[in-house]
Image (cartoon, rainbow, N blue to C red):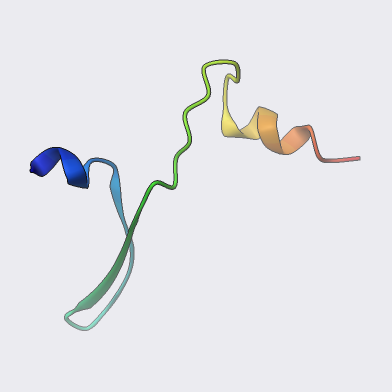
Length: 43
């Protein structure tokens, strides 16, 4: 089904070959952005 391929991200292309990944974005309604998650771990 097409739903199985939701949120597929193209990572890199070399010639006619490409790398793709899915599941990279974890949605957490408690956070406003990925930057806020990163700033939690910065001194």
